[in-house]
Length: 202
Image 1: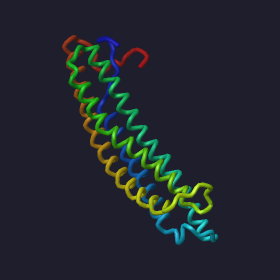
Image 2: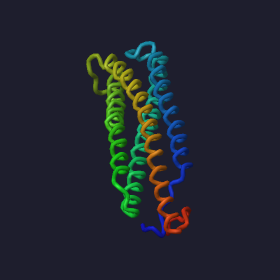
Image 3: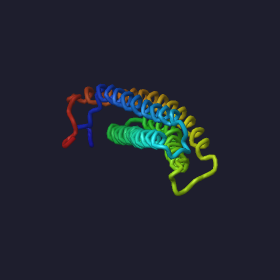
Image 4: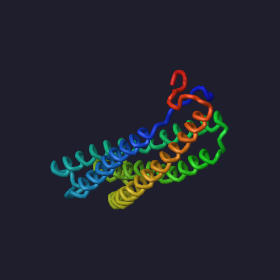
């Protein structure tokens, strides 16, 4: 990439990411909440009655879908920070900008990673204890039901808090991308170049 062409990062991309994440985060957290409520409504988790089995099946199916969606949302956030970080790095190198923007991008990324990883771990751990609390499971753990319930509450709370943090960091990172983009436009105007020229093959 050189000054004759650059990868454009218009403001609408920032708004689009904010909107996409907001929708996905709301859906995934609602999915986890519905899963929790379905589990709470199970009359007797240790019963082998048809009613209890149907309730457990519904809880399991919603849990599987909610966990997969929530993991996907966290993966999208990580991919977003990696992609924008790469763009900022290459743009700063091409236009000889200071590395402050790249360092800020890294700082924002590492603010969300611990919570993201923690939520992923909790989701998997909660699901595992949920499976072990099933009376039909081959592997049983004493008090697995209560451990599963405690982990479910912790996971629900942690994921909601992490989603809020991710949204805040995405907004800040979007503003950072806009700042770099405006600096690129300034440099290109000073050199009489088209500020909307995309990179070849971009």
